[in-house]
Length: 133
Picture 1 (cartoon, rainbow, N blue to C red):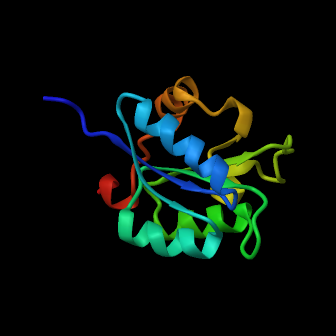
Picture 2 (tube, rainbow, N blue to C red):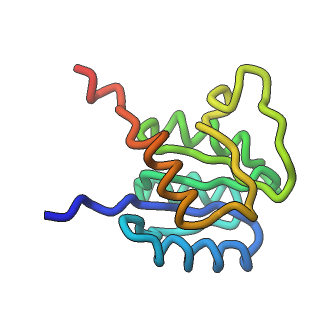
């Protein structure tokens, strides 16, 4: 029996990057593109509907930025693994990426099948509080 696919959601205000990311996710064995959002507000609502395993969140978006989106997703979906993405280098915030609800940061140009597999191997799945008791 095959293991279930990792359910991936992409949050980015650039449609072109979302299109490329969708193709990469769909072409990567063991990963399934389940949805995408163009802003933080949309991502929060969509996560409630889709319950993704892995969420890539653009750092700079209009409205709720990526850091706040990751923070809110971590609170509402603690089992999801949140990864910040950007075209620019990002300095770790005080307290590290976990302080904003993300496990790490990656550059958009590094996004590909190898990165997906490495990130999931290193950071997912995450136990939820209900799994501990």
